[in-house]
Image (cartoon, rainbow over the protein chains, first blue to last red):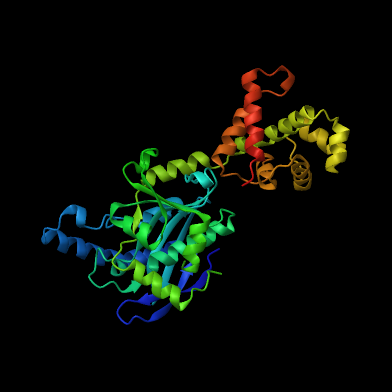
Length: 210
Length: 162
């Protein structure tokens, strides 16, 4: 059953904090609405970048994602959970987490369970890769905070893990302050991507602003 | 309730995020689905777990040189229940009996409930251990060194605190 919790985002233009909802089970209709709003903005940005001759590696690597398919194919499995942040009646960010079958790699917590972030995407108007002046800050951080709280609820003590696209490495090392375990050469499906993990201590620090 | 963040936290975190792209993910959708399917618990899995639980209790009782009545008494469960757990593969024990045995034998309650097939496990390693254990036979006096090792590894994994 989906539930909502109040959180804050920050309007980058006015620098005011605005109320938003964290949704812990996003439904198909909400995904549809989000895609209808996001796709035209993303496609227009990709078209402009192509026309301007922006090199492919500088274009958003997440520009082609289709959350409708992700939700339609994966929402039926207990291990997957779709999180969202809604503000101004629009979805500001989506996240797909896996809550079972993933384990820590940091030696101090080796083989303990964790919440793994399979996908995280902010709305195109919040993405610095897509617009010059992103609308809201904190969408990514609030989704991470939600994943950390779910990890605590599941007795994973706040531990989370993810593989970062090259364009997002800075966010997970600097803003999320996760441990960078380097390029993954173990997992066939993430070969070449950097793996990041958050320990219990880092989760506490992140949530408390330490 | 999602933690209520202070004004200072919001200020600091939004400054840290500035100019950084958060969007990430790469796993192929078909592969995610394949992995989820491979790990969903089937009725056959549940049967395997039920068999495993009885065999495990039998093994542990023998290793401690306890009679069935001694174990039943120590765990404060009915001896007939213990008999059913050890000998009837289709038998589904009550959660209380499983929790009492977990407490007595020093295993985490959740893992024991998973091994008993009372709750679905998503712990891949636990499944692997259980399947290998179930395949290793019942009378541990006649087990080969390799089979004993499988049992010992399973018990070691079960005893690990989450």
